[in-house]
Image (cartoon, rainbow, N blue to C red; front, side, top):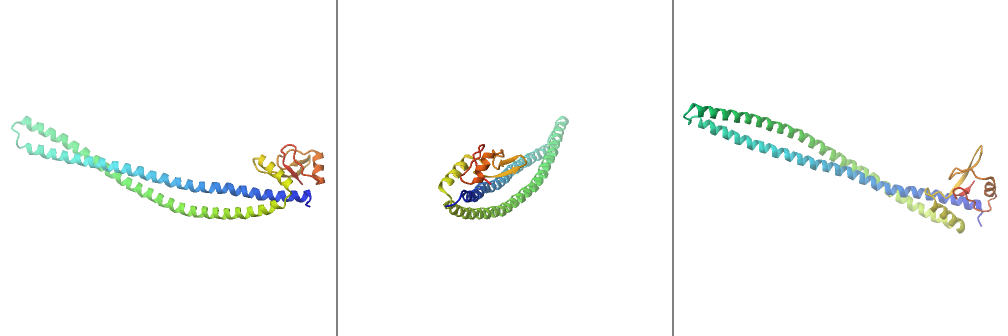
Length: 240
């Protein structure tokens, strides 16, 4: 039959295994979230591309409308110029000339607007290249990082399986009552730490779990190693 000291050593080994399993559990939950975060970045870039396409299409439509209007004004000017030779009075001639002048100014303004649209379209084409480059870079980064994360997940799952087997072996060698106490205390603690080593400073002995000083009589009980002793403050099992 094992002594209390041996049982406590087994519990410390079990706790180390449980802590590692908990760390792996957290990582196995966090790593897929990293993949999701990377995918979210890709969706953001795709949305940016969609918005760009809408803006570019709107710009092209506006330019075509201006070009159509430009053609209509040109036709108007040609039509009015042909009428200059048909008018019979100076007043009518001057009115046509004034109208042609106004339309010519409008034509010049439309040409400036069309040129402005063309310049903006060139800038947008450069922006499209930039977005496409970012999408390609993100895709490559995602593939590389996803591969690394998936390899890490596989490694952690293997490590978890090995630890679970080791845990089963460890548990099988622990006294049932001691084990039940360990499980009960572990469940009651947010950090999952059920057994704490005693540390010492110039003022006395301290529980390694809650950092509260331990009364002398409890220290003596721990030293006798005849029973499992719990910290009066946090309830953790005490070990030297």
